Image 1 (cartoon, rainbow over the protein chains, first blue to last red):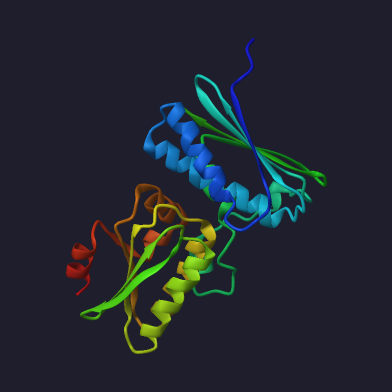
Image 2 (spheres, chains in turn purple, yellow):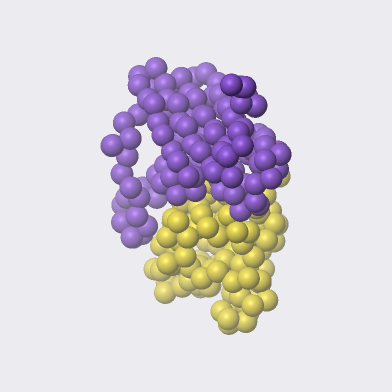
Length: 137
Length: 113
């Protein structure tokens, strides 16, 4: 079996570095002939995944992003070496709970990723998190 | 570069136009521009995102604060010229329950005036 073509990025944790990931995603999506709609959804999900890795993981090192290309799917892995997280403890945000209340307005990232991608999975422990998300062609 | 490119009062609507990535910085800039007019009694705010084609949830969350501020004065926040992925993001977040979205600035001004 041949190895999937893979694009790998290593991003330093610097402001707006998620845009490097989206620019790469656009090139990969174009290569795969994905629609503009799907390309936009991938970019948006990737931005949120990077922000989670940059900010919430409290990782001090780089974040790695792997784009695995195959005939039917684009598989994206976002890997950090942060503190990990428990998905079951992440509250599903609702705007009704955030407007005119003291609840923090942020906390949308995971929900957006799940809505915009076809499949989302996590492997997380105290040594880091690997987020795997898939967009079907 | 991401920034507010223009702020103008058209009738009783303040129109805030942007370019680039709608992240925390641009969200804060929009909010500050709007606050100046809200403090002068203007309560209709239109954000023209024609030249912003990407957003993050932190930038969008700042707009939730702006909705709250406008609700205090019976005002409204609207958007125009959204690219499809920003429209979809706002819809997933539920912003479209509280804000109208118009295809162009001209249509928005006509409807809001």
